[in-house]
Amino acid sequence: DEAIDRETQFANTLESKTSLEEYLLNAKVDMDLLQSELAEKNEMLSMEQNRNKNLKDQICAKETELKELDSSKTSARKELDSATSKISQLQDDVEERASALRISESKLSDMTQQIAEYERRLFDKEASLKQMQDEAIDRETQFANTLESKTSLE
Image (tube, rainbow, N blue to C red; front, side, top):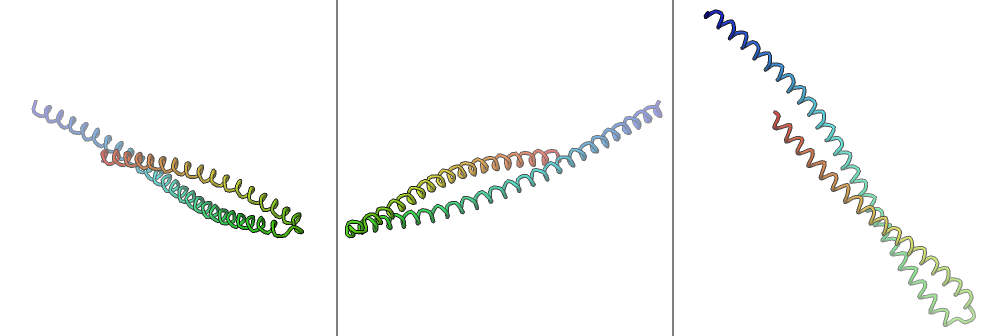
């Protein structure tokens, strides 16, 4: 009876060891999958951060362009003021000056429209950047949760 008990105990121990080895193997496979997924998430996060940086650079370039356009607009307005004062002084050149004034007004209108368009684009880019930043924060939170889950599994 004692020998049978030992054999039974040995068989149970062997079965437990086999089950434990199988569990450990499955856990290692799960860990490898999680590490692979983590690497993929890190790569996606890096790509998103690069995309955000590129968008910020584009926004800065558009802001610079907008400032230059604003400067051009100011210059155009000064030209317009100068032309207007000369019209009253030079009656003989009225037609020529009126033509120059129409051209300046057209340029000013075009520039004003361009500025409005650039402001609209800048607003759209800022909204897009905000959305991307929010998405990046969500992905970072998901990543942290995934990492926390992975750490819990270990």
